[in-house]
Each structure stands twice: as structure tokens, then as C-alpha cells.
Image (cartoon, rainbow, N blue to C red):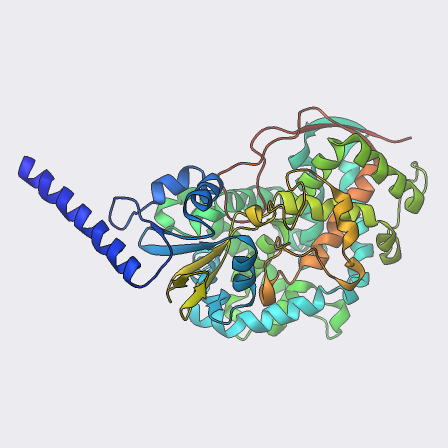
Length: 466
């Protein structure tokens, strides 16, 4: 037994030594490889990914590699690394996310590569700032309809309150008014399955389905629902482009209609998974900063008038006057940005004194880039006024802001997302006097994908304004 253990130890040390020598000879970034072959540093990384990234940066410098589960993930940090990630033609977004999309919605690689760019350009056009006026009235009406269900006053989880208002509203806008009811599907059951699906999305897209049975069951249920939804959308698809839902535009663009349900589920996730937590964080930050709350209410009253109106109309012109709320949204998105976004290195990339080899997964952490004091002075402080420096009318963000992705692969629906959150915040605070019942929660250190989730409870007490 002692001989066997010694032989195993020698093999592991030999494997680590060979990897170290190869990396040094090729001038690759320092590599954190752990001591278990194939598993690598996955166990240490998985305990608290956000903390791991920052500790590795402090120890190894602005470029480092983490070997996990048979893959090399090279993290680039600070300004030069961010620039390379966003602009290098030798790093590919599609190659990095294809497998995750296949796990998430069962779209095979061939169909994904054939449709991704066309769908991206269509969504970028349909959800651009020039088309938002077609949607703002509908989203305003949907939010107010759902707010009526809150009653005159109450106390509950702020996150659940936001989800109760936003989920059905955005579903109706993206897929068609009451389409899930038209196809005899229960909206509450849909929300429950989607919550299961979203909660474990990050892990399930990286692991075989048999490890994630609850997630796989909800995914199967949702895909079956979307078969009915897509069939209904196809039957009722109007010839006029402005009358179509976003789902109908997706179906018109797809080259493989048999995957319509799969792309319908992907559209639902893309429309909800980040908009809900950003809305939550924006309200939580506003309500936990009295001076900010006061400024927001002054802006809301100057645009929408004194509280008391049962029905309020928010126009595109009104949104242009609600600039401070938009600053609050972007500042919240900055502070609670995704832990990592990714591309695949197709040809060796030189950065600093290192060569990042082809095949590496290139990683950039918006969460930590947004804490660089060179880009964002006093980075840990919620300061909506910092956005005064940018020209949002020309759709420009602050330098170093990558919450919606970087370079040519920014989220195509980012302007729609900002608009819907802006409408939600303005309407909710116009209609309800609000108080947080818990301190502002910290963000969970466990997530890399999407907007950060709250670590603790955050309840709200609300009362309809007279």
C-alpha cells in the first residue's frame, strides 16, 4: 500500500512538474493547477469564485490561468487586459458559449452557428433605442396592471415583489399578451419552473443533465410549453413587422423552425435573468441611500406629477427626463456586474510579457474591472452622479463599463432592459411609499454568470401614496 501511495504521489508531482516546465518554456501566464489531475483547482475556485479571482490577481498579477476540469481559463484584468478582451480578433465569443447554449436549451452546434449572428443583428435592431417608443407604452401598462395585485400596502421580499411585477409583464411583451394563457398554460407554474431553471442555470450549463435532475425536469417542462407557444405564435404571425412580437421576429429569422421552442426558452431566460436582479439592486440601493431616494422622488414628481393618479402614462420623452433614475440603474449594474464573461482564444494572444495559447478560455471579470479606481474613483461607493460624465443620449457608457459585455458582443437588448427597469422604478416609487426592513444585503460570492444575487434577505414595506 505504501508503495502504491508513493507511486501515485510521484505521478501527481511529475504531472505538475511537466505542466510547469511546458508553461515556462512557452512563456505562458502563471497557472494555478491544483494537485488533482483533470480536476485541477476547481474545488478551491468553486468555494468562492469572486474572491478567488481577486486573490489570484493580487498574488500572480494581472494575467493568470486557472486549470479546472480539463480546461484552461486565462483571466485578464486591469485596463490593458480589458482592451484585449474587447477588441482582439483572435478571441471568439461564439466558440466560448456554444456548449453552454447546447446544455441550456438543447440547440446543437450546427444550428447555433448558423443562426447566432442573424438573430443577434435582428434583436439588436428590434430592441434598439430607435424602436423603444413602440414598446414603452405597453410595458408601462403591463407593470401597472401587475402592481394592482400588490394591494394598498404590504411587506414582503423586495426580490419577490420585483419578480411579481416584471416576469408576467416582460413575458407578455416578448411573446404576446396572455399567450401562455391562450395555450392553456398556468402562468404561476411557468414562473415556478423558470425559477428552478434560472436558479441552477450557471451550474447546469457546465454539467451533464443527470447531475441536475430538478433543473432538467423544469427545462423539459418549459420546452414542452414553448412548443405550444411557438405553434400559436406561428399561426397568429401578422405580416406587419411592427405588429409582431419579439418571438415572432425570432421565428421569422430562424433557418431551422423545429428549434423554435428552444430559442423561445433562450429568449425568456435572456429577457428575465438579469433584468429582475438589476431592478432589485437598483431599488435596494435607492432606498438604502436617503439622499438618492430624495433626488429620485423629486425627479419622478417633476415628470409624472404629484402622486394620486390611478393610471400613469410614461412616454419616451418622459424617460429622457428621468436621467437620474437611469444613472442609478447603471451604477447598480456596475456594482453588481457579472463575475465573468468569456471568449475562446483562437490564435495565440500576446499580453504584457505573456503569450496566451490558442484553446484557452479567455475570462474577463466585469465585477472586478468595475472596482478599478483608475476607471471608477471610490469604486465601492454607490455614486449615481458619476454617470453625469457620459453622454447617454449618444448611447455611450463610461470607459471600463462592461456589465453588458464588451466589444462587438454586447447584449443586443441592453437598451430595452434599461428602459423597462427605468419605467418600473419610476412607476413603483411614484405609486408606493417604500421602506427597507433589512440592511442592504451583500452580494453572494458564489456566482460568475449574470448579475450578482443577494446573499441575505431584503424585505420591503410599501404603502400606496394618497
